[in-house]
Length: 441
Image (cartoon, rainbow, N blue to C red):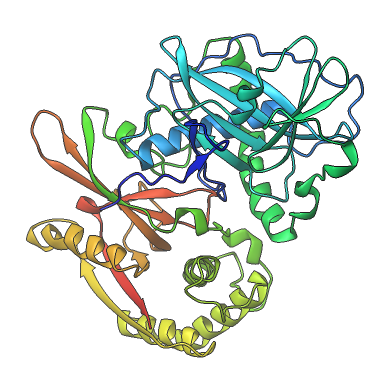
């Protein structure tokens, strides 16, 4: 079972200021319900910004709120709550007046409630730092918002330019400008940009959301926990409230790339009309395993990986399809990269005693770090609020919620579905289809 993990960083030698800081690949994108924005702090920022930023302050605000909301679902004992509010948005720079990021400072009931640093670059991790408890480290320098500029040049690396144009580091020492390097400019890569662009596309689709936040009239378009296409974004909201997290495990979230089916249209291994969900699901699993170090022999070029997986799928299913054929195909794909994988499946009917064991099965698989290739079968499958027939998805986490009054449980599998640039949820109790466990040896 997952417990909240912290990376504790001692800010300065001899001090007890601690921060939970975790630079992650941000993929999850869901909206919260209880955020407000006060007038943002305007520090003495440069008169002229040097760079054309890829991430605007408005987009950074949405990204931060989405991250906080998903983190509250993922880590139920976080100190972020529905009372958490956006207190300030602070723009961060380098010595050449390039915007490097945005600090979204948080509060709850008038007290500090952590922060989120969002990158201004689209080719590095969008979430650079966060804490659900402490202030950002630049607060140690007590910056004067009227006369000082905050510099941010690497994770946990802050400076201020004071009213005498001196650059001061976290140890209160003056630093020469030539000794400071903007590390973010050398961090970027194209694959991270492609992943982030999928997230930013969802920001663009919900552009009016920021206007509602800034005006204080936030009404989340996803307040029901269900997306516009009927997929489950937030199981708490989908159930209508009154539930508490009971058990969960999400070992892979930060390694998920959420590749979309549409990306592979027209490539070798694709299917005319875009019906290559099975190959996309396994591509997402294998790439996730590559990202976390479990499967280093997988190619870094995702199009090549998909082409191999998709062509092997087309060959395997050319004349017939069954659960065993899917198992053989999965094992064959891993074997093509010099690895042995054992695939097995269990079929669930969506009702009766057959589904009493689904949670135990899924939990055991995920706890063993065995991802799931899932064949969602039959039309009107309420497990996915999906009315289009069969669809394959990649399962990588589980969540079990308990009703506060009855004590009954509702359990969910978190999946990469090939449609969205963030995780969605399958309701286990009504699931119909096959769940294939992948044991990579």
